[in-house]
Structure formats: structure tokens, C-alpha cells
Image (cartoon, rainbow, N blue to C red; front, side):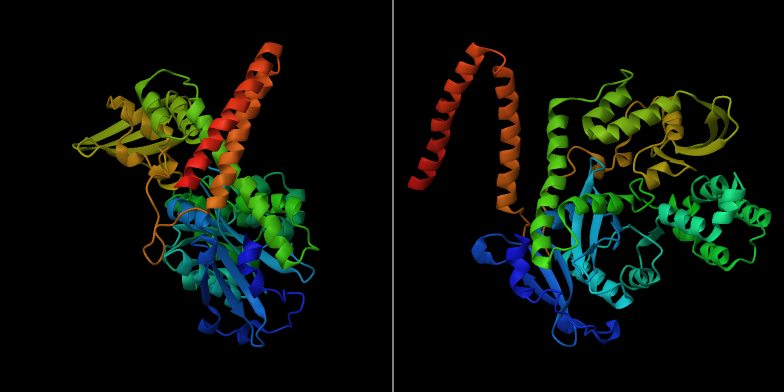
Length: 480
């Protein structure tokens, strides 16, 4: 599909492109916004092209209907990475990725870029916003690329830009490998600065202590890293919704899968064909999760109202995570409570441990907040908050703490495009998904029937009858 849509515009490919400095790229002239051909009855396939000064294609961005729908529903958090290269001319491929209600990978759009300059990234993010009706993500995860950071600040000024924790740690290893080898604690303390602290003063004290121990107070990399601390330490990160993501690992996993489908020797047209196959397989994972969710309910470790209710609302993956938090809440004790009705301020901790968490509860509005900011960061309540709700005999999670993006019904409703039209998935993709579902069910029944000769004969006879009945639907449609 991609090759047929974009193919005519990229016949020259990048194999023939001439080197052009990124600063010479024209601006609005290159934002050629085109839709999928209506004569093929597949609407809402969007792609934008940017040409260089000599008329050669420099950058491509595209999003199919499913990507547009997925972004409207789950585009609160995105990861972007340009590590993967295609073609012998080393073109960066930049998938824009997030997670759905099963915490599985969804693709919001893809770019093939000429280079990794601020100009190219700025064009890409602007194109992305144009396709997605101007909706900006709450949080975006990238590596420490300076050009990318400048483009994000320009196009997504309200979006919280997070640096991938894994990339940051790898950069620390690169700069201070000798310290890691000479100290058993340096790596652990560096990770602690990234992830463990809930209060800014505690983080700053720990960071200064770490630098002092290793005599790095005046080290340029450390000073620069500290200046960007709001992008990488959880002290600040936990205040903004990130779906529990802390790195660009989603992109890295996706890139790893891409290597199995797309080879560096492929030209751009071959890339589109193989990428579509990859996308089909990635999306089928959600169909499998939906099917399993419709057939099986997650096991309750305790038969209590709050878990029964959560199981009915959350997807299986999110319910399992929520149930883990509830289990932890059983080991939490209340140390103090300051009452100022309707506000109640608790200090709680895990039994026999010293670390305290502060939980505030409003008995009138049923609003609750914890200093760990788990709900703000992940999107479901933490064990500390669940402990306080239990004290108040609240046996159902208040509705304001049930994010729709984590529920079974997250896909209900419709999505409209920039012209106000309802976005519909590619009919061919819908047919393909139906075929996969029906094939799986048929194989399950056939495998069971094969265990008995009588059952096999019965199944074969019914398949013939079923085939004739199915054909009647098409005969009736042809007459109409």
C-alpha cells in the first residue's frame, strides 16, 4: 500500500540524491500535503514530502488511517529515535511510537530523513502536527541529540521533553568508564540519582555528594548534564504523565524487529513494502490481546470489591499491574495522620522499613495524592494511596483515577481528521485482520477435531456446509 501511494513521488529514490546543506532546504514550498487516492477508496492516508533546492526528495513523513486513530487515542506519550538506517546512502528512519491500552507498541507515523539536522527535525515535527490536527504529546522521549532537542523546543514548546535514561547511563559509561571500573558504587549511585528520589533537595544533595566523592565538581559533562536534569531525573519526571515509560526502549525494540524485515540494501520502494508487513504483524498483537481479553479474565489473587471492579474496567495488562499495587498496600502501615477536615495528611511506610510516603486525602471530593506521584506518572493509583482509600472504606477506585486510555473501552468513539471527517481504517487491513482471526479459530477447532476420526468427518462436512452458507452473503450482495 505505501509503495503504491508514495511510489510515484519517489521514483528517483535517495540513490540519486545530491548533497545539499540542510540550511538550503526551502520551507513551506516543500510541505506538499497529499491524501490517498480516492479512486482506491482508501481515504485518510497522509504523506508529506520535502524537496531540496535541486528538486530531489529530501524528507518524507507518512501516517496511515490506523496511525492517525492510534495517535488520537494514545498519543499522550511518544518515543522518537533515528538510530535505524535504510538504503546504502544511510538514510535515517524515524518511527514515532507509543503504547496502547495493553502497553503494547503502536506506531503513530514514520519518517525517512535526509539528515539529522535541526531543520529536518523541525520539518518532521511540523508535518506530524499538521497530520494530527495540531495535537501535541504530553511527553516525548528521545536520546541526547542536540539538534533534535532544538526542534522539539521550537515545535513542541509545551511538551515535556525527556531524555532516555538508558542513553544517559551509556553516555556516563563512555565518559567515566575508568570510574565505573574502579568503584562498585558509582554506577548504582548514578542510577539512584536518575530514578529514586521524590524530593528535589534530596536529589541535589545526592548528586553533589556523588560528584564530590569522585572529584567531578568541575567536570564539563557533569555540569552540562546537571543543567538538563529536568529532562532525565525522576524527581521532575514523575510530575508528568509518561505511561510508565522511562526510555526509548520502545523504539529500540521496534528497530530490532525492523532488522528482520528491512535490509540495508533495500531501496526506498522495497522498504515501504517490507515495512507494511512489519506494521501488520505489530498491529496483530493488539488483536490477539483483545481476543484473549474477551475470552479470559485475569485471576484474582484476592476476591475483594476493588479488584473485581478494576478487573472489569482495566485491560488485562493494566489490571495485573494494579493488582500488584494492591498487594503491596497490604504490607503498608500508617505512621501518622494530621486531620484538618476535609483534608487528611498521612505518613505511610512499608512494614519494618523506614522510608515514608506522604498521602493527602480529601474526604469531600475523594481526591487523593501521594508524594511518589505514581498516578501522575503511570496513570493508576499506587499502593500508598490504595492503603488510605481502604482506611476510608472506599472499595471502588474513584472514577477520576481510572484513566480511559488504560481501559477495555479505550477505542470506543470515533476520530476525525483535520477537515472534520471521520477517520476510518484501511478496509484491506480490516479484511486482513478478520482473516487472521477466523483462521486462528478455524485452526483451533480443526486441531481438536483431528483427534477423532468421527469428529474429523463431522468437521469436514460442516466446513462444506459453512462454505455454501458464506457464499450466499456474496450472492445476495451482488444482486443488490
